[in-house]
Image (tube, rainbow, N blue to C red):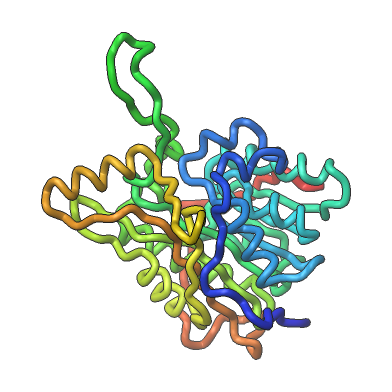
Length: 315
């Protein structure tokens, strides 16, 4: 087994030279993908995959959404594996991954529908201890989700949100409190550590948000969750959500992000537009086998929930 180490990994990633829709254009994403409320930037995913894995490696996303990690892994000659809780998005991820495979030389990949807290029972045992890279992003606060829709068609003036919910399932972690989300994400990272190969890498993209004026420092909390799950923090980088023109940042916030900032400033809160995501890099100890890390907590799955893997794509 090898462990990939770039000779000079940049600490600031230029991941938004163009807008997110432009990045997804002609990359194999089905039209339904646009409706997902929180999509990872394709260039961000590609940068992480290129930096922390090699062609032929297994790349896993335990909360894969529309399958951005799988699509970019396929384009780069890796084998993508995804787990997604919501059936709608799991099927979208499968269709996206299949579209990439049909383009030519993309390696085979898989998408499973289920709760990532049961990851070791969802993905086949043949992959356990062989995953080179886990790349994922936990759900953010609802204030960062959604797109603008004009209300002129209904005879009213103004705008409203659309596509701002993963689903209406209250069990979805996107609808849980920050504390519940972090506890569950710690369980997911512990499961990821089990399926990673020794020395394998976990890359989590995340950002802070405000809830009722209070800052939710999700990046720092995720680092703590990784430590609790038995992973070793290695790097903390920045992925730009803004373009660079003539040496200046060109932000691309949503309408509602701009509105939230304006409203906060009127209330005297010095809020600023988010122009980057934190890239948190953690690793599994090189000497660790698939057995649980002695210093990590054990997270048994809730007895009330059954782990059922539904393969929605395997080619």
